Length: 278
Ligand SMILES: [Zn+2]
Image (cartoon, rainbow, N blue to C red):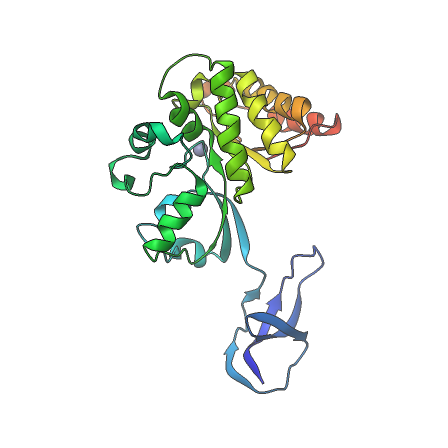
């Protein structure tokens, strides 16, 4: 006896093969059988004729890591078929921070999230559990570079010292061990905008160690997009970390008509061996 049978849907299984008509049986939260017609008993049979049946989608760019604290149903994702979210984007998370500078993190997180502002990803998870909160989707957490920088040196608009960079590396390394998938950049915003290539490469070294990813809200998303792309490529060239462009734009009048050129820019970099995705 199955728990559910999804009957009569069009299966799009994510293997890049063509879609096909089939029933899908589910038991104990897992797919137990996919076949043309499943003629068995189930606790519930759901007629999905005319619908697509697919694995849950992964939202590559989400900010649910804080919004689920307001509404943990994440319905705007669930109704789109999204079941996993890569969250903590654009340099923004509410952790990590050196223990003795938690004021910086509370300031960065903002007044609504003061309680959840944490010294580490692990501490954040512990607070979430203690409060009985639970996201309805799967969280694939990133560490925000802006948070790291603000935690270590506040909003100071200057180059980080070698000691500050080492501290950012230490905090990032600890959170990667705790389950983070990489570091997100928000180079169009303070305090990420004050960073330079050296600082980004130093964080890239840590991410590469764990085979993680660096999704970036780039420094420019206009006629200067190629300059911002080069900054991302350089992280990969120097450290091997996989860089991902979150918002790929040609915004502003000066960039009108240049989108194909920017697309080609990335294609050429990939051809040359840079591990960059968009
Ligand atoms: Zn962004």
